[in-house]
Amino acid sequence: MTHLISKVARPLLLGVLIAGLGAPALAQDNVISAAKAAGTVGEQADGYLGIKGSVGADVRSAVDALNIKRRAAYTDLAAKRNVTVQEVAASTGCQTLSSRVQTGQIYKIGTADWQVKGAGAIALPAYCAGNGG
Image 1: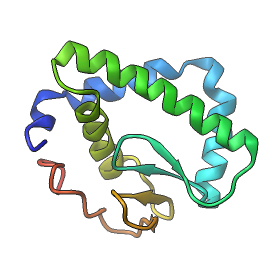
Image 2: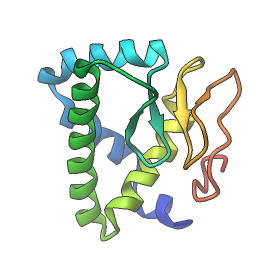
Image 3: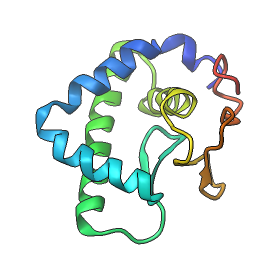
């Protein structure tokens, strides 16, 4: 997977994700934002949101809906780039961990426990070549 960043254009990938959200997702975004602030939802290195502990049905539903949209965007981009969906998802995970997880938010890399982002950069997996990993 060390070559995946070179095969998947990060700005394009984030644009696909943002465009896929649209106005109907605003309520879901508020639920997810609140859950991130509460430390029960966080980004994962696999490119998807994850849930830490128990959450309400509204949070679980919002996370599931967003992950479905991400999967669709990853699938579309993977077909266009002739790479696997997993490679696109992991590439996005690298980008998200390095640029979108804010101080105090939780994140997860692989099978490790959830961590809270401090003031410094997140130590990224080795496959995140070019992202500090």
